[in-house]
Length: 249
Ligand SMILES: NC(=O)c1ccc[n+]([C@@H]2O[C@H](COP(=O)([O-])OP(=O)(O)OC[C@H]3O[C@@H](n4cnc5c(N)ncnc54)[C@H](O)[C@@H]3O)[C@@H](O)[C@H]2O)c1
Image 1 (cartoon, helix red, strand yellow):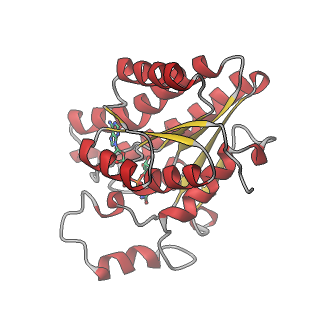
Image 2 (cartoon, protein in one colour):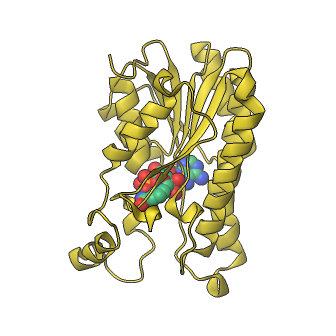
């Protein structure tokens, strides 16, 4: 079977929504035991139930003790951790001059600290057995953009953290890659806008994309599943664009 995850145990942070939820569903469909980790208790429970997953682990990935406890709980319960997908993330749509200390720290706290804390806990757990980690970067991790300064900085950090971890663990059987999505139709894309999200606004965003449309979460989940599977066995430290040509400008 394509990307067979039978017998594999996977954690998906941010699994209650958007691309994390799509990834959770796809990995489970392909045989993985998937545990959603998300701070949104109600949504995490609803998504886990509808995808017929185990109960989620609820908490904040910007808290290192929570990340350590989550990985410890999963390995104690299932005896192993094979896959970590770090999809939890937030965005603040503000230019640098109007970004508050709190906004900066929140974005860095979830996107950078959260990714690091989960990766650190996972590589400790995967030591000796190996595994695959897939982080969520972004087109804004490589390109600059006005109005999302903290987010751009945070995703740039995720990109190079991915490379650094890949090199540290290349000989240890732990592969670390990132997907870098473009404009994907999820709750995040619609969040933090100054006015109501209209069809015209979404069409304007789509018009900035070379292929002329937004991505569906499933189109990114497919690439995450590939990177998490043995089919990408010779890939580590890669930043894989899933952006319909946006970064090719
Ligand atoms: N939507 C896009 O266009 C786009 C583009 C590029 C990259 N990304 C990245 O992809 C990833 C997934 O984004 P999405 O669009 O599916 O977002 P989303 O808002 O639909 O889902 C994000 C999930 O993360 C969870 N989360 C947020 N903060 C958390 C925390 N501190 N602890 C635990 N869970 C937390 C939320 O509850 C939510 O369920 C994010 O890292 C995002 O930055 C999104």
